Amino acid sequence: MVSKSKFQAIRGTRDLLPPDTALWNRVEQTAHEIFTTYGFGEIRPPIFEATELFSRAVGGDTDIVGKEMYTFEDHNLIELEQHRAALIIRSVSVGLPSEFAKYERSVLAYADVVSERISIGDVPRTPENERALGGIRTCLGEAERAGKDFLGSQSSSDELAFEKYLKGVKQALRLLRFGDVISLRPEATASVCRAYIEHNMQQMPQPVKLYYMGPMFRRERPQKGRYRQFYQIGAEILGGPDAPAIDAELIEMLMNFFDKCGLQGTELDINSIGHSADNCRRGYVAKLKAELEKVKDQLGADSQRRIETNPLRVLDSKLEHEQPIIEKLPRIADHLCDDCKTHYAAVKRELELRGVLYRENWRLVRGLDYYMRTTFEITARGLGSQNAVCGGGRYDGLVELLGGPPTKGIGFAIGEDRLILSLQEQEKVKASRMGEISASITGKATVTGTLTNLSIVDVYIAWMGQNAYATAILAAKTLRNAGYRVELPPIEQKFGKALERASKLGSRFALILGDDEVTSGQWTLKTLADGSQQKLTEPALLEYLQKL
Ligand code: HAM
Image (tube, rainbow, N blue to C red):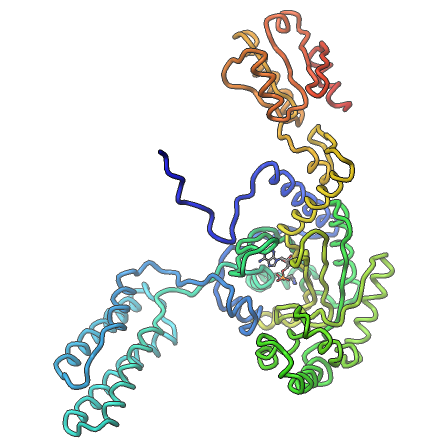
């Protein structure tokens, strides 16, 4: 018996397969087309970056940075790491000076090896590593002294000091970094800002408009619409003014994109979270914190923790029993400074000018630290609890925070997995209403049209005989060049078998090529749905298909 493969996609990741991938491609193609018409160019940042880029940009206290990043040290010094692990787990007794002396020699020899590796550039020369090496040597010296004192005094305070410094040695060993600490990107805004600075894009005509698409990684609890590897389509506008028309046009582009994808029933929520000044968000957060303290006992553990780490995030809570409490909390709109209030009002006006429907949501605070002023989120149908299909907002301070010049910024990211899921759910509902799946073909279908066409073949070429085979190869080439999806069997089949296979593949047509067809130049085209047949020359066949 053949055993089932033990290899499976890692939890939270999945294979995207045909015919779904055709829809993914169409959605991505739509993004390329729509975003280009608004003046955006594509950027493809790397999949991994320095961990510090994300912790600075997204924020050390956020769930993304605190719990969800895939982080590792980028090196292949396995033996150095194993040696360190052995030194960390080795136990050393204060009462056995020869044991300590041996340990001390091993650790010092190890520190010398690391120093040597630093000098030849194998291990990064960072202040942290220099500090760790210093810490190892100092703590070893102190432990040796405490150990000697203990041998004379047998006092517990000397023993405790010995233990403390030994622990110090091990802690310093742990702090050594043999390579750069890097993370798989949990999002791409930080990367785009890093690239803006790195490539001196502030010298280019402002604002710079960039879009991207690709996989992101977050170690979240997987469920429908939530994966550990997921895909985003995002756009960022960097530099130039912070005119409210920029916020509104970006949102308009987004809604236009969803529209072109055929996604129905989207809802746009907007808010302004002000800027980080005492007379604006900081003042509000202090007030919110004070109010939350008063009701702390009635809140769940997560919200209680957030009162300390990030009180705004309490507003995000979905816990039912917290809802009436949250509704009574002070609202940010009543605490915005005059400039932020004016900006928010103008964004709403600009949206109205563009006919973009929105709903104000004072609880929309977003889970990343870099936002200020405008925030927005779009929800879609058919997604269950993970119904946010897009999130974004303004982040005027971010480029500066990452070491660049003061730069305005705003952007969004669409969850592509969720967008696809919602499109598919929508199509399922439609299909069950119509009681049938309409057949659409020609490869020139609209995005939603593709969904109804579950087949990946337009024309199946049923050929018999070597003469017909040569014609079949040429016919396949011609049809493919004209954009049709063609299946050309590599081995001769009886016509009956070939037609059976064509239907199994969901092909709409079978092009029958035998000796008769080759001699007469009149090819037989069979429509599989109704079994009808017609004779056509090659040009007439193309014309016929194109007319459909
Ligand atoms: P975000 O809200 O963290 O924002 O993610 C944006 C979208 O990505 C979400 O609305 C959701 O559709 C999708 N998403 C997030 N996590 C997952 C997951 N685990 N599985 C499936 N889909 C997911 C950002 O990432 C910001 N960088 C957006 C932005 C760009 N703000 C300004 N510029």
